[in-house]
Length: 354
Image (cartoon, rainbow, N blue to C red; front, side):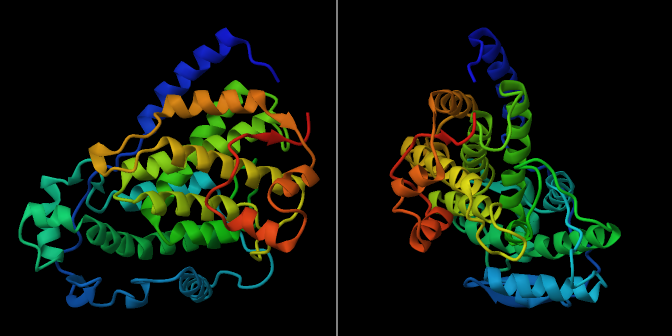
């Protein structure tokens, strides 16, 4: 597909206008119910206050531990535990995440801890006494509030799933697989930025590639841009490190290619998507200078869109065999690398169908 340059330019300006509004900042919020009984525990070396009946197993969970917690919570809520469980869409989950994340302090790399949130942080972290100390410990503070948020997000997601009676599917990347959903629920803050990136790139792709479909250039653009925007949004909207932003995006977009049982789908579409995802992450890593906060330099939203349009339009058609051979051949090791590696030796995009 060849874009009319004038049309493309106007669409890119339109895209920048929309997407720059979504360069994420969380709205601020109300404090928890002061009448709720609380207790003190230790979390990552800090004394923290939690509601007395808060499930402590939510702190420091692995993905496997969270999956078990979610399954039990779903069963306790009388959600069907066998057969095809109703799953929610990106749009439904995003609404829940925005609402629940807004109840907690805003913490990111560029602004650090905001003055207006200090009173609550001092109350929840009894040993933190100064703004400077709060900024120094922003990562721990962020993780603590994300854990509190996780409980309420899970409860709301289960309630919505329980109200649905059929799985909802949508165009990639518009629908959630079960492994992808559980990955996102483990960190609601990162998840909000990841889903916002998916929704933004869907809108962009409709304008830039109106004939986008599985396997073609438009789909290559969609997946690559999704990965790059997700990394940018997480880095801008949280105190995430380079590795955390890229790793979360990689895990999510790879689980997007799995089936609901968590098994790898090994077909030509998955090979194309995983290759293009890796190429975008490699480009993003190379183009980002990993300083902290305001000292970090990374591609703007418009830089990302322009670059991925250029890569998609220059992409060549290749078979699954070609793609697998670039990564080591058609074998289990290659598929594991495509699903699990953060980066790639390549930065080019490919498509498999005209």
